Every structure is written in structure tokens, then in C-alpha cells.
Image 1 (cartoon, rainbow, N blue to C red):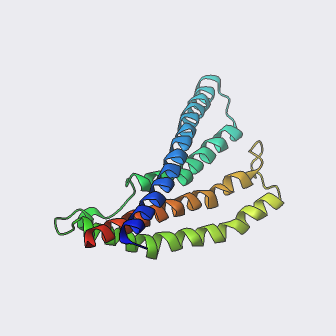
Image 2: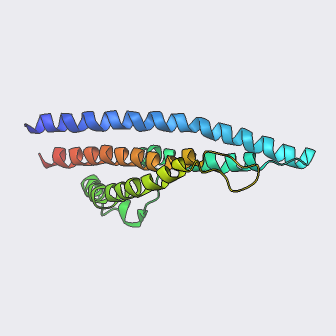
Amino acid sequence: MKRDDTLLLLQQISDKLDQFSEFSGKLVSWLVLAMVLLVSYDVAMRYYFLSGSIALQEMEWHLFSLIFLIGAAYTLKHDDHVRLDLFYKSRFMNDQHRAWVNLLGSLLLLIPFCILIITTSWPFVFQAYIHLEGSPDPGGLPYRWILKAGIPLGFTLLLLQGVADIAKNLKLILRDKS
């Protein structure tokens, strides 16, 4: 395969996966709106009508969990994740060095960690589904397996965005070599 064909293939892979992360991020942003409305309603009910609900409070942290898990890929795509910028943004690091750091970080840390979480969380989700696990609190929400299924889903999305980043950084490294 020629270098130009390889660069084009890497670009196509990263573009498709980026589009998917963008879509999932925009989709999960609606959960933020739902959570804000839910919290506002819950607070108003508790303080003005002295009426609280365990189910509403659980739904709030369920939504927060899903926003965090599913939004991680979108955050990585936009490079808004946490990193130690002391070295990464220093004047000693050019784009080529940053591409190598990102490539090695994705290959050695991000991808293996995502695979570990995905494979170890499936039995956790499966057990919750088999037993129809619900909230242990009276008046809490049923079907806790749906929330737990967000763990492998979120890390799968993160893994896919990691593959997109690997393709982008590899393209940058290969392009700059010529």
C-alpha cells in the first residue's frame, strides 16, 4: 500500500469515528438538559412543598453517571480531557513529539484500560440483568442493569475515539516523515 493510500485510509477511519463521537456527545448533551430540569423540579418540590422523592434523586445520579460515561469519548475528541500540560505544552514539544506522546499513550494506556473495563464490566451488567437488580432503597428505581450497561457502553465509545486518535496521530507522524 502506498503512503498516500495509507494516509487516506487513516483519515477516513479517524473522520468516521470522530463523527460517531460527535453524534454521541450531542446526544448525551440532551441528558444534561434533562438532569438540570429534574434537579430544578426536585429542589422546588423539596423546599416549597416539603415533598421529596428517592426515585427522583436516584434518577439525578443515574443521569450524571451516563453523562460522564458516554460523554468521555466526546471530551477526548475535543482534547478537553485531563492531562499534565507542564511537558505537553512546553516549548520543547512540537507537533511531532505530541503525536508520539498521544500515540503511545493511546496504545499503551487508553486502549488496554478500555478493554479491561469493558471485559470486566460485562459480568457485572449481566448479573444485574439476570437478577433484575433494582434500588435497595424504598421507592427507588428498578432496572439498575440499564445504568450499569452504561459502563461498557461508555468505555466502548472511548475505545473507538482512542482508535480515531491513534489514526490521526499515526497520520501526522507518517506525513511528517516524508
